[in-house]
Image 1 (cartoon, rainbow, N blue to C red):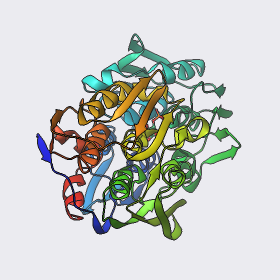
Image 2: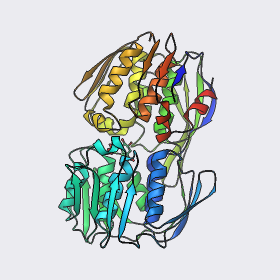
Image 3: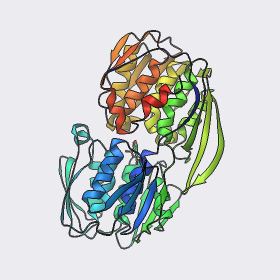
Image 4: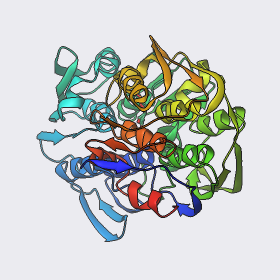
Length: 424
Ligand code: S3P
């Protein structure tokens, strides 16, 4: 689907943001491990989370929709076969987290495979620590398909070279089914939904600074309610901040501090943003965000904030094109390992739109404020977050922008277009 986007005259109104992708994945995976029955309210209908849902069904869980985004999972027959062929689609989270789950399950052999983009993504980061635990994994030069031959593992004390929630979660999930104490220490703290949800389901898990410790535990089936996705809300926050005559409220957004780097950055850039009605739901902070058209200024984004906004960097780049001065993003080299090389692809497409942006090895530098010309055709490289970032930029372009293959938004946010259009 190719779409043409015209300049917006302002975004106004209130929206409810769809469910968090990371938390949805974990809710289905972890309920599959309980051996019991429980409900998930507000499960993401993005293609990535549907891949996880299909995987737990292939693993023997019954999963039925009781209503819109409302699921009941019954895991009594889960993991009862010996061989599985599991399609992870485009989802790195499914592949990396299921690797940890399956590696620690004796008598199971599973092939985890995915689409073209997932087959190119690095899996060494999970294979190495799992092998240190004694796991047996066959791979193609550290890329998928991965054949995971489950067995009893040994606990490890592992320092991750990068702050990655997928790596940390993979090791913790292997540790959940391993005698002894498994420890993971990260250079900076990445999103901690795994730790919070495992605790909620009564696992023996503790966090001390940048270290998480887990012992073999049986999870309890409990109902889970998923909050809205701050990574999806980010496109709306930036769109409202940069488009003249805008004032929007985004309801029910997950505000876990390991995810709110985007709010901190927009505040530092001078955005007119406030958090309303903050509360705790299912061991996660939730609130509403009000944001209005803002005069932004450039800043430097580096170091420990990077894992707290890793998925938002493409749309932060769009905000930076409309900020006075220079914005520098550093320490974000792992952006090259996402659904696309998000540094190279973002820089090439934003340049076409008229941005003054230069690629660096571990980020980019943007000079603003620029009147974006538009009047061009851009590619999203099969990457949902690039597609939505380019859409956000197009809202302030002088002339229309054609985005090719916009259907890739369905990976995380199938509701994106109608929700955005409801604010025009
Ligand atoms: C995710 C972790 C992040 C993020 C991805 C989802 C997760 O990846 O980019 O979209 O759900 O754990 P890394 O852990 O590789 O940084």
